Amino acid sequence: MSGVRAGPREWIGLAVLALPTMLLSLDVTVLYLALPQLGADLRPDGAETLWITDVYGFMIAGFLVTMGTLGDRIGRRRLLVIGAAAFGAASVLAAYATSPQMLIVARALLGVAGSTLMPSTLSLISTMFTDPRERGSAIGIWASCFSVGIAAGPVVGGLLLDAFWWGSVFLLGVPVMAVLLVAAPLLLPEYRNPEAGRLDVVSVVLSLAAILPVIYGIKRWAGHGFETSAAVVLVVGPVFGYVFARRQRRLAHPLLDLRLFRNRTFRAAAVVSVLAASGLGGMYLFVTQYLQLVEGLSPVRAGMWLLPAAFALIAATLATTVVARRVRPGYVLGGGLAVAAVGYLLLALVDSTGGLPLLVTGFVVLYAGFSPVMVLGVDLIVGSVPAEEAGSAAAVAETGTEFGLALGIAVLGSLGAAVYRDRTDESIPEGVPDRVADAAHDSLAGVTAAAEGLPAGPRDDVLGSARDAFTTGLNVVGGVGAALMLVLAALAVSMLRHAGPTADRDTAESSPDAGVEPDRVPVTAGIAADRDRSTIPDPPAGTPPTIA
View: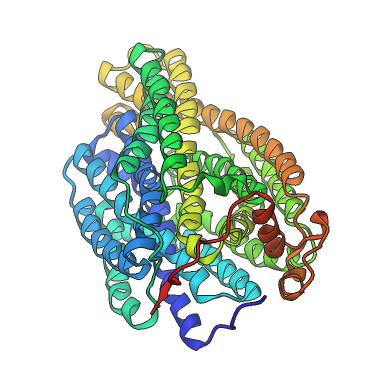
């Protein structure tokens, strides 16, 4: 049966929940723009640069499941407020970092704090908007706010970087978190599940032990070639993952209810979200650096060239909510991913000279194709569980996105970096000082700073070779991304063909007839039916969840 329609307080509360959403997306984009200035000031090597960019996402991914479950226990609004205060403090620490190591630690703390924000926002949306159509609209607005943050980030970040030092981009989080701290207790309901049980600390440790060694192993292997230590940790991570899964099945109140993955809609949406986000994360890193280090654009101009893609994402997000009311989500997702594959192919053809128009066009097409994953992926995951499990489902949704983005930076970023190093080893001109050659081997940002003191001729030769090598790495990542998107498009159509368009959800959920053909079931109702078929039991009888 359809839920109670939301009132003015819920819709104003949604605006409050949009604040951390916009901030987290903005925080990623402004960091990419700040990398050249940051690299010239702190002088991180290639490995440290990757850690600075992706330790934030990996810490979010590592702690999201924990925080989603913790919010169900201590209160989702309370966790949101705690996380906002911690995020503001960590932002100040990052802004005034004096070394790469200090910035990496600050970014890690930002990740832990950020992991409290996203599952809280999504789960509170599911609490505030119980009507299926309104919940879908609210999630669409939430996804659009993520897009707005991406659109605003390059421009706001570029203006800050032109006027101030690189650390100013991190201070954006301070006023946003201050507003959230004041508004959340006034406008947002509290929600806690008294049936949730105690938080299992051993499961928290095991979840981190399953994720972080794999990431370290990938980075170590990509940065230093095959080593015994890299091979060992790549094996250790899955072993801990297996132990984690075994423990969750035995616990009465698991950190992550693995029975959720028996739901084919939940499972398909989670897999597609993770892998699609990984392609986007890896490519964004290369595009932003291409604009500044290959094309030589200032941060503001680079941000302006990113705006068309961000606006395409916003427009496509709004269009997705309309199209999904008439077209099955599997086809909407598959079509979007196929469009994204075209964008990747265009990026695979970009040249190091005169490649700006093709780069911008490819990125616009890529972003437009990615929008259905943002909107429908989250709606399918969060809408597939009852309200008392919304925190865990929201955590899975955000874990998938954040882990995918960070995994893409690590895997595709490392792949592109390996291609770059191979090309620079072959193409650096003879007679270049060792310090410049070493900097060229590490990163394009490093050699750009190191070559400043060279005469015009040798400097142009070194930078030309490094830019060619970097563009080749971008091309390789584009080709891999295109292949990945095509595979995901086929997977989305195949695994989500049973779910129907969202226009039928109200009718289906309010209908007394349970005997609906699986392939005729609309998204939200279909997910509920899918949950029943997947043998996930109904919530136990007892005290209902507390909503203040």
